Image (cartoon, rainbow, N blue to C red; front, side, top):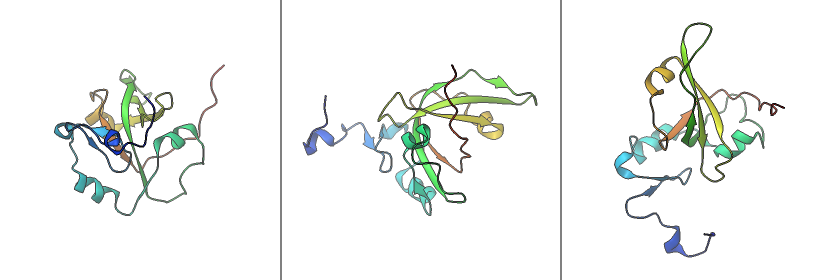
Length: 139
């Protein structure tokens, strides 16, 4: 279906709520961070849409700026072991606007230890990321 101007069509079904920054639909019973907690986490930071970050359009946020993004886990690697012997995993997150555009996120150390078992479809708030330059597609 297309995008229409009907206000009723824009509302989420009763069993879903729309996250205020990303506009991603979330099941309230699966929400682990309340709206108020998210507003507190976001205080003093700027929301950046995931798609421009993933595609490299518009460049990275300014050095030293506080920003965050929100995305849905759509793909993940099997757990891997770095040369240091520590575990890591690579997630692909999407804002679901264009599912073909994803942001790769590498989880190490504590982020890996507490999140490597997470399930597809979960929505995450990411703050204080280090963005690497987009890599050219491999031949």
